[in-house]
Amino acid sequence: MIPILDLKRQYNQIGKEVEKEVLEVLRSGCYILGPNNKALSESLADYTGVNYAVTLNSGTDALHLALRALDIGEGDEVITTAFTFVATTEAIGIVGAKPVFVDIDKDKLHPVKKNRPIARGDLATSNAIFIAFILLFSGLFISLFINSGFFWLSLIFILFQYTYSLLLKKKAVVDIIGISFFFIIRTYAGEVATGYHLPVWIMLAVVFLSLFLASGKRRSEINNTGTKTRSALAGYDKNLLDFYTTMFAVSTLISYALFTFTEEPVIFDGLIHHFLLENFPNALGRKWYMITILPVIFGIMRYGQVIFEMQEGERPEKIIATDIPLLMIIFMWGFMMIAIIYVI
Picture (cartoon, rainbow, N blue to C red):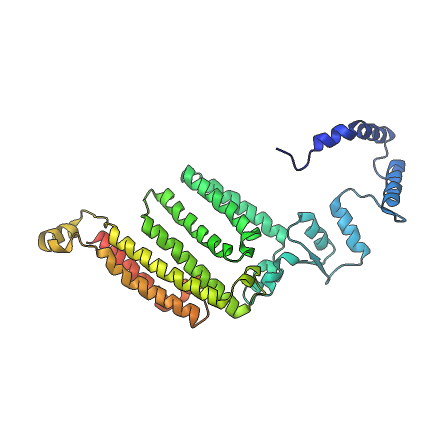
């Protein structure tokens, strides 16, 4: 493996020269300023073609001094990148200025995302990164207590999340598939954590449902904000997203219908089951899961109405949590599943 930075090789090339200069400084007793420091400053000025150069103890101080030299202070804004070392934003904060991150300009153009703490300027990127790392390692540590499989899935999820955020979400089509992959990992993680096997048709239903939600999300984004808030949106138009949304909605319904037809219900040997067995034996052994297709049809129709008529498919999590008709459909589906599993 070729290292990114081979310090040992560098040292082998200039080690004797460095050791000689270090010993000379140590013997002189002049650790701050002094003739060696003056010689270095003059050499740097000559090398860079300027009249003067000032040596400092750190890159943070160098950035701080540069900002001071430009008379940047309270009330000023400094454009920088979020993909940098913490010293960059630290130096801007020391002089009282406000860092403006070019990486998050897309969020600032968005009517909703502009109110996020980082985009709004309420949370420094350095603090956000620090908190993110704490939560990341805490989550991985907790996952170890579930089982090793769940830990590895969590690690894969985190790595894919960074890959998606930095690269994949900028590419049309790939971004929608990436969103679907997140749902697949979450679903499979639930199987690994609980030990309950998920039928292949319900897994496919999850895949197609996630693609349906993602396609509807992109369609609403184009309709509400155009292509300025997300680079991947430039690779779509409404007709293409209408095709995706319709195709994945139909695929979701077909996959779920096949699940209900092929899957045998779990039988709990309880009092109600014995009562039905003695009095209504014909009620047992039927494909009762199939009656849950009805709320699934209603749910897809309602969500399609939200996407195509109300143009509000951009935030699926908000729709599912606040749309009353959709909530009623979800509760009806849940009630029917509980009744089939625990009663019939």
